[in-house]
Every structure is written in structure tokens, then in C-alpha cells.
Length: 343
Image (cartoon, rainbow, N blue to C red):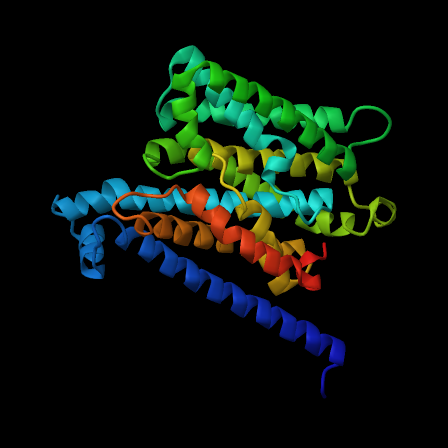
């Protein structure tokens, strides 16, 4: 007996999404290999295999173990965090132009990094990691409190307006501090560009537990965010926990974007662009958008990092600068597609 057209269509859609996920994982694997092999000293696959399986302490082994591998791990962690954070922001605010910076995460992190440099003399990523994370957390909490003040719970419009306002104030304070203190300005200049330079495991690993918790919370909220996309009234009628979903989503965004920003600094366009790519492939279902975003984002980020290493060789271009140049035209193309722009 032939199945109904509806069941056949659903089955085909699921197979297409699963095959797309496999293809995305393959692309990510290629990006990881390129990230380890390409740089100021090009390496071969044989050298990579030797360094991973039977290291003997050669210069090549040290380059891979101490520089390339930690940098690649940072790209994987930061990319996954930014991609999913952007998807959660867009689903929560119902804003196709939403990104993690919309809730003041980047501005809060930048302000606290400036404070750490000015007050305690922090100069290395490992020294101001926790300041950046706390700043992102404080800014998001302030935005959420402002957005939820008054009558009723926090809604997407108030959260967006509160985020823009708080980010503007915090950015102004940070700018004033950097103009008054040249030392702070020099440290922030590199941090604000977004980079994986000197981001070893001592910087990445402390933020990983928070990012993992954020990913778990995003997955937990995925189904409810689908329902919230239908509107508050219909979501309430369907029994969706609106207040709990919004609160958990804000916590997830804070942990994901805060952790990523603390590691690498503010990196533009990844959180904004990648959910559009995922939505174009799988449609508006957040249960598929989140895993696709967690795979596509680090792929784009690692490839951008590789491009930054070779485009001005032997110098490097920060990955945040490359993602801006790559992301802008890609985003313009994607948002012109009705399917990609639909939330």
C-alpha cells in the first residue's frame, strides 16, 4: 500500500535534512584539517598524523600541539556557541536581523575587559576571560530586567529596544575609557577585532562548561520557541510555557554568547548569518536550525580564520575582520530569499 502524500513528503524532508547534516559535518571536518595544516608554516597530512599518533617533540609536533590544535578547538567552541546563540536570539525576538550583540552581550563584555585592563592591569586573554564573561552576564541581566519591567512579561520588542539602549550606553562608556587610557585602547584594539591568536586551552577550557550548558538549554527550548513563533496568544492556548521559555532562552544566549565573546572577542556576522543559512536549508523548525547552526558556524569561522592567515601572509588578519567581509555579501544574498528571511 502506497503511503499518503503527506507522510511521503515528511519522510523525504527528514531524509534531506539528515543528509544535509552529514554533508555539513563533512565540511566541518575539512575545515578542521585546513585549520591545522594551513598557516605561516604549511604542514602536510603525514605531519599531522605523526603529531597526533606518535609525537617526538619536533618543531612540527609543537606547532600542532601548542598552536594549531588549541586554535582550532577555540574556533569550534566559539563557532558553535555563536551560531546557536544567534539562532536563539532570532527565534526569541522574532527578528531576522537579531544577533547575540542585540542583548548587549558584546558591549557588556567589552566594558568589563576595559575595566580589567584599567583597574588590575590585565593584558592577556587568560587574565581578562572572566571579566568579559561577567560583563556579558551583567549586561544581559540588565537588559532582561528593563525589558520585563512594567506591566506584563518581557516581550521581543521591549527586549530588543532595551538591548539596543543598554549596548549604546555601555559602548559609550568603553569608548570614553579607551580614549582616556592609551594602554587600555591598545589591548582592546586587538580584542575588539575578534581573534584566536594566543587563545590556548587555558583560555578555552574554563568557558566550555558554560557553553555546554547554554547548548543544552537551547535544545530544551527549541520546541517551545517553535510555538512562540506562532504568537503569544496561540502559544498560550497550546500550553507553551512562555515565561519559562523566554527566561531560559535569555540564560542560554548569555552563556553561549558570553562564553564565545570572552574567548575570542566580539566576532560579527556569524550569529546573524548562520541561522539564515540553516533556515534556508531546513525551514523554520528550531529543532533542526540549532544543530545545523552549531555545525555551519564553526565551519565558516575556521575557514575565515584560515583565509585571515594567508591573505596578507606572513602577517595575519583577525578572524573577526574576515567574517565581516565574508558575511555581509552572503547575508545580503540570503535575506533576499523569502524562505531564508521567514521566522
